[in-house]
Length: 90
Image (cartoon, rainbow, N blue to C red; front, top):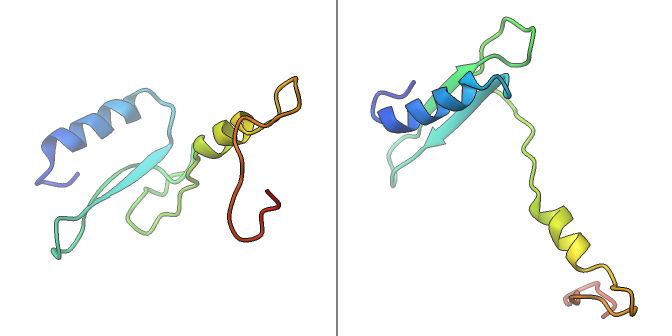
């Protein structure tokens, strides 16, 4: 755990204690100083290798599916939002 961030480390440790993630790596940077890392857990469930700052994690974002559902046409056939920009038809 990063020595300079005890509260952040404690929050991450509490989340790890739930057993939901196998491991986590958090990078904290202030200005131009070198990043500090908080690394906990394993690469995957059932794997002995520990997570570190070079570990690649899959990051999920729920904003894209939520936006997509919001843009679906309603029962009247009109979309709730429009898409504008290069390559868009509307």
